[in-house]
Length: 83
Length: 433
Image (cartoon, rainbow over all chains, first blue to last red):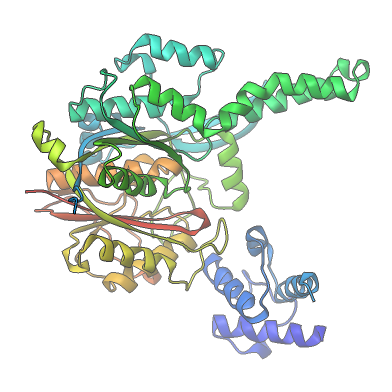
């Protein structure tokens, strides 16, 4: 389940930035490795929220700096969701 | 069926880092002047932080010709504490009323009032609570005091400032200075407050609740606001606000406020008032996604602009000049640019697009109103001031900003603002015959 989420988040990020998911690893850095800026970070947030029906807080957005961290934020948000 | 009155603007009162009153203010815009200072804020002798802002200097509330007894009443209520943004509201209203040549001194002056502000009085409140709490918690008295006594002392110490954070008291103070007895309201829609206030004022006049309504807004950009924006990572470190630019690095606050007089056109014509423009209508959409981040890819802002066209019966091709929010933060500017290009098309020569924050800074809750005043002065003078610091527009924004002053016949102008919390708004003004 957790692995599926990580994979899905990776594919979703790859899709937003126009790269192949196989190029992205959990420790791939948003800013240094992928050139993601504040605009792309928000686009990724929008895509994640739509796909997983979760809410990411405003102040979390600039703090997510790797693909793995993005997946972790999604997992935590899903755990908080009422079953 | 009763005829719905048309609503016009007959007075403006800008108060900013580059001038108090419309003459000096407009001249300095044409001369591309700014007044950016590095503000240092200290607690006792320890520097908390420094930040650049467009600073309003040489401001003295006693120099505006406002009745002294009215100002003394406020000073007495405030126990001698000067609330800078409250003084800005009062001063800008006096300027606007003088400009409109309305005599407000009569009690039966038929004036209504709409004020807009984000956090009036928050700073003195916060400082007082912090200082007193520090004294009481860390000071020597701690061991001598029960919790009940501590709470009682804390309550009594800050309660007056605490009450004043509530907006109604400030509405009362300002209304009393100008003998306002008609419909009055205090609103807060973040940076879009000015446009919401204009719309509300127009409705008040159209519903014949008042003949004239003064709309005023102000903001004193204090350390609390700076720290919030700094921690969000959207405050410029070099003090240069670059709207829609590839080099944009954040907001720079602007100190000041603005007021306008809105009036039933019949009343304005009857008294021979000079009319700046008719307010044709506005559009408002609450995106409601997040407080501090716009939903890139969303269509809320486009919706607000479309509603403004629909409500005013205006076509997009009629807009001669557009003034966006242009805050100098890349994602916010990109979001706004998308709304503009979705509406008007990409990289068009018309409407002219220019932004004013590089002149006066980001005046937060008052920014939309202050920039509307500049827009109205541009309309009256058939002159489009250029956007400063804009020679490197981010190609992703696909908009062309005015680079040099343009003198051209202007008839219909539009102000748009996409504010925190997603208060997206648009307002259209047109010269009357």
